[in-house]
Structures are given as structure tokens and as C-alpha cells.
Length: 234
Image 1: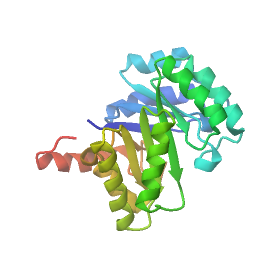
Image 2: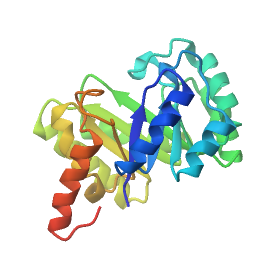
Image 3: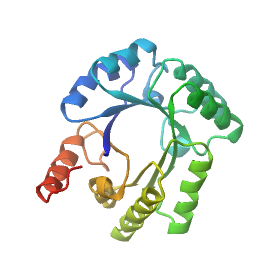
Image 4: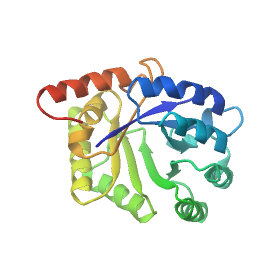
């Protein structure tokens, strides 16, 4: 079963929490709290309990500039912030593959010992590399301690999307838990076919204005309903 995760880029944890029920009503299974968009980095036990009351799971992300985010504090500051967030009991935290191993390894160990699942993520905003290169990235994420591997690549052609789907299918067939997708308009098909390629999580915005190169949740659900007409249930 593929879960839908709506990315929330609100400037406070409370503002994100207030949007969560609407995400759930649209069919989201979880929300990604983008700490790098907050005025003050925060996610508390009370925020987590609030999500739990409406049956939503959390992915906590502090995205760096090198991976397309807004956090400018460096690896040590990111690690310290996420260490504090682990105490709030999130369901998952996102740890970037590019973070220095010196800070990444203790963070992953702390999360997993606290019962928090770890997403090891990699984003290439410039291209879709050759298949062997992408496969090596997936393997590095696995070795870094990922419960779930997230890999996203910028697509420039339908061939890029085909290679990404092949990568997702290969990883799934080998028993890896993955969220592998394309960015940009040519990447839309990788999100539509995520349930068929074995991706565990599909990320999307709440509406069609917050991330112009992604499918919003309503559009994604519409495509999935078409799949159901042919007998496949995402």
C-alpha cells in the first residue's frame, strides 16, 4: 500500500497542525512538516499528539539548501535540531544522505533507538543520472541506516521517468522500502504509478499552487481512481 504524504511549509508548527485535518479529508495518510520554512524550529509532543488524534502520521524534515530547502545552519545545527525533535515522538524523520557522517550516524542511531523511523533522502535538482549512479545512491541510503529510502531526481524527458520507475521497481523487488520519484513535469508519471512501482510514500502538495512541478493531492487521487477502474487498487 502506498501512502500519500502532503508537504506542509507553514511558518509555525501550529499553523501546520491546523491544516492537517483538511489534508486528511482529502485523503492524505501523513503530513511532512518542513521545519526549514518555520520562523522558529518547533515540533512538540503536543503537536504530535494533535496529529495522532486525527489519525495522521508525521514526517519531520529540515531540508538544507543543497537538497532544495531553506535551512542554512549547517550539518551540526541540523543534527542538533533534529535530535531535539526526536523527543517529541514523530513517526518518521528525514535525514539527508549528504549530511556529514559525523553528525548523521548519531542522529540515525538516536532516532531508531527511540522508535522513530528514519528516511534517508537524496535530491538531485539538476538531472536524472545514469541508472547505475542512481542505484549506487539507493545503496548508500540503505547503508546509512534508512528504514525508508527517499530518492528524487529532476526529469528532462520521458526516458528519465522510465529509468526512475525501473529503479523503484528494482529496489522494491529486492525488498527495500523506498520512495523513489521524479521531479518536474516529466516526473508526474512516477508519482501516478508509484503504487505499481512499489514506492511506499508519494509526496504531494495540498493544492496546485504550492509546488508547480508536482501533482497536488486532488489530481493524484483522480489518477489513482482511474487505475481502480482497471481493477488496481492503490
